[in-house]
Amino acid sequence: MMKIIAFHSYKGGTGKTHLSANLATVLAQRGHKTALLDLDFRGPNLQTLCGIEATVTINDLLFDPDLTGEDILVSFEEKYKIPLYAAFASTDFRKMGDIVRADKKQRQRSLKRILRLRDELSEAGFDYTIIDTSPGVQMESIDGLVISDATCLVLKADDFDISGTKSMVTQLYSLLDSKNYVVLNRVVAEKCPPEQGVWDNEDVQMVKRFEETITEEMRMEVITSIPCFCEVAREGSRSIFSIKHPEHYFSKYIEELATKLINGF
Ligand SMILES: Nc1ncnc2c1ncn2[C@@H]1O[C@H](COP(=O)(O)OP(=O)(O)OP(=O)(O)O)[C@@H](O)[C@H]1O
Ligand SMILES: [Mg+2]
Image (cartoon, rainbow, N blue to C red; front, side, top):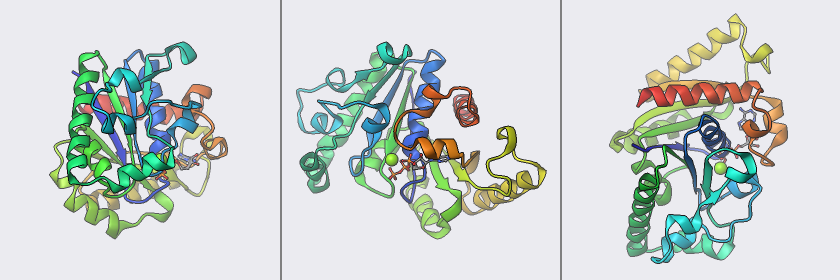
């Protein structure tokens, strides 16, 4: 049965888009038929990351009952030789505004269409669907979280807002049926970047203490702590890192995350 994994955060810029695109890539590289959905209607940048200009987007699907998953999914089979498909959020300012201004009726319609898309993907034999969301408690992000089997709350270790994140976790995550994990991303330790991708003993202890504090405060498992890698930051939003650099330590961290998530189901 298809499993859905969402990446979410309290604050922006924690790495949701990069982590979701790279996780989807790693799963597809393993031969799993994987869909990557952009539900970040407020500030979409998956199109840039994938080097795609989508003509029909998830925005269109939410407003047009005649559209189906097939109309919006872009295949990467030919480009990357892996069973990866993506559906994007529109970067058209007008369509972004339609989402922001949607009334209660349209929001209900949107949720129904997202649920229908999930069923279509499942029927089409997808193994995994990975969802990128907007930070905070936007309705569309919540729709993404509601349909997920696992949620990764991404925290950027350097400007981590414990009270805001904690209140979101207490009020929203406690209502979710999914397995909820924390992903610590862009962790800066004393020796940064870590040699061979692995922290030395002092840094390991530092990261461990940080993970323990978060587990205690959030009552959620920290599934991984990913170092801040200059190469990833330098690459920015130009490409999916794991496609270009499968041997890099960042890609190894994503592979490990994929294995842990799969084993957790
Ligand atoms: N482990 C990492 N090491 C270094 N840089 C990283 C790492 N993960 C992400 N980044 C960088 O952090 C920046 C923000 O990442 P990204 O766009 O994925 O965040 P986001 O949570 O999706 O942001 P938004 O909330 O605005 O959608 C990007 O420039 C990316 O290259
Ligand atoms: Mg993003």
